[in-house]
Amino acid sequence: MKKLLKTLVETTRKLERTKKLLTSAKFKKWLLVVVCVIVVAAAGYSIYRSRFYKKDAVAIINGQKITIAQLKKKISKYPDFYQQYMKQYPQEALNDYIGELLLLQQAKKYAKKYREKINEQIEDYKKDLLIREYLNDQVMSKAEITEDEIKAYYNEHLKEFFMPERVHLYEIVVPTQEAAETILKRLNTGEDFSEIARKESISTSSKDKGGDIGIISRGQLMPEMEELIFSMKTGEVFPKVIKTEQGYHIVKVGEKMPAQLQTLEQASPTIRQTLIQMRKKQLLQTYVNQLKNQSKIQQFPENLKAL
Image (cartoon, rainbow, N blue to C red; front, side):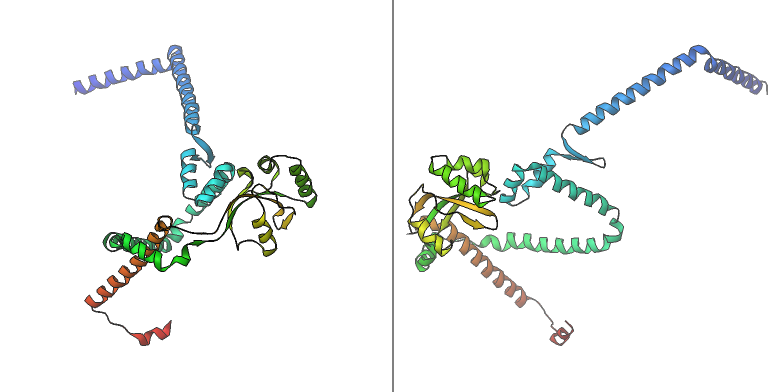
């Protein structure tokens, strides 16, 4: 009992000392200093974190960061021609990404509602992926083509490798007939076609390439234009302005290539791909037939009427 009383007395004294310490001016000043340090440190960390978070960001959408690496990865999944367009107009690529992210953030709020339907689609995709990987590894990998097969196909399909007469064309596209006529006059005085195209053409596909349209084969142009264009010399400008839905076109003739038959060497890559696809189709059909012959299959055609 004495020990208990002694312990209670000592505890009471400690509490009194602690109370005096907590209420002392010195402790209050010390506590204020500690609080200030914590507040300053927290603010500094917040600023540092904010700057660090923004370091490689191209946008932050509702707190979710889009980095330049993520944007590049997104663009890399587009078709080649669209990748080039997006690299020329990166803001449009970012706008697309922002729109997609906003839709995803909103859709996540309804994830439970669509979970069952999504899981069904995931299962279907997994089945398709499993079949594709299995076929590529076990069946399609046997689709080998020999040089003799390529040569035989070439000799039997020579017409497929005949290349008609071709011409390399360049264009300048402007919005009005008057502007086109003015440019024709400027070209006649010696101004550079490519420079005018880069500065004044409204064609998004050829403007940055100095008006380069690419190589056109005989048969791809309007008949009334074709004969004249293919009779022109390299470097000549088509004498008339051509009107289309895109605007008014001034066309220049570049390199001309005569009709010719592709050599076996030139045609080989195309032939190889054609034969590989044909061989894969044959292998798949043969393999499926083999599985059918090895399996017990019951069919109920009368139930097909319910389709």
